[in-house]
Structures are given as structure tokens and as C-alpha cells.
Length: 242
Image (tube, one colour):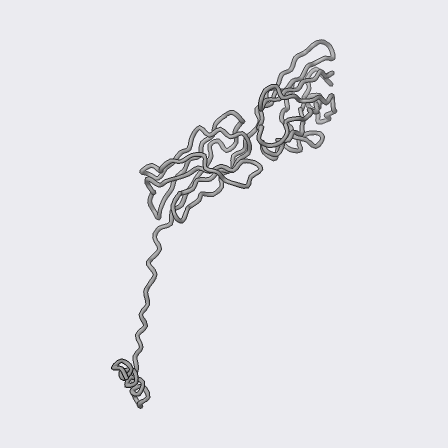
């Protein structure tokens, strides 16, 4: 019998004696205290823009009660129809924890976020940006009972067909009684730019008109409020008072 086995037997025998006290010490290793958790705050300015213009995403990154300087940050973008973020820019935070991604040109409604590229990664809350189509209207009087209305729209080319038609509605100023004056095709005169026109007989000397359409990019651009304002189901890209 080895010396260690004999020692174990003596311990067991002593534990069975009356009044014997056996003390068992359990060694535990305490988990190290968790360090401060980084947090990212980000906003877009402006949060609604017209296609062709620019927006920026800025904010701060902090760790505990203080700023986190020199943090490796990535700006990620997820454009309509939404589903996957991709990195579009990178920068390090300033000594005061601030960052600013500027000169961002978006062509459709987009979700943005800022990510701390560390392990584990830290992600800001989603930053939505609404991108409106650009709209240019033109009105020209051709004579009694004849007024030309035209519309030129700048839009995304990354969200469905650009082929559509325009429904032109007119109403006397001060009323809400719109009637359909004409429906004309819209043609793409340049990549991402479409045009349509019509000649109408105005309902009054001063009147309101609306241009309504259902393009393939309808749900990729603009705020939801633009949908459903037309006298019929459609996307109102323009309204004017003459």
C-alpha cells in the first residue's frame, strides 16, 4: 500500500470516530469583473433627403462614463428592400469619442448603423434615412382651355421597373373635388430621370393639380405619407397650385 493510500485510510477512520471534525476546503476562482461596455449613439442629418443631395451620420462612442478615443468604426448601409448590411465607410473616433461620416449620397430609403469593429462587436441603433425623388414641375398656358402640365422625376434605378404612367388630377382651388384630366405614359429620358406631360382644360382660372403614379420604385422612396394621398390608389410625387 502506498503512503498516500495509507494516509487516506487514516483520514476516513478518524472521520468515523465520535467527536471527530473534518473540515473540507473548496477552492473557487472568482470570475474577473466585467469591464465597461462600449455604447454608440448615432443620428442622420438630415434624416429625410432628396435623391442627389447628401446626408451625414454623426455621434459619439463611449465606454463607461467617458469617451472612447481611436475606436475603429464602420458605417454600414442596408438599402430597400432591406436584408443585408454592407460596410460603406470606416474611420477612427476622435479623442472626445466623436465621429462623423459625411458626404453620403443615397438613392433610396436606407437603414444605416455604426459598428465598433472589435470582439465582441458593438452596434448602434438603426438610423433610418428617407430618400425622396426629385421633382420638377412646369405649367404653361397655351390659350383658352389649354394648359400644359409637365413633370420631371429623378429616382432610383435599383428598385424595380421605371416604366409607368401618370394620372393627372385637377380641382378648382379651394375645393377637394378632383377629377381625372388625363393619363399619360412616363418615359425615361436619362438613367434615373423620367418625364411626362399633358395638356388639360383647367376647371377654373386658379386650380390645383396632382400627378399620381405607380412606378416599380414606388415603395423604395419617400415617406409612407406620400402613398394614398391621390384621389385613386397611387404614389403622389407632385402637387401644385396655379
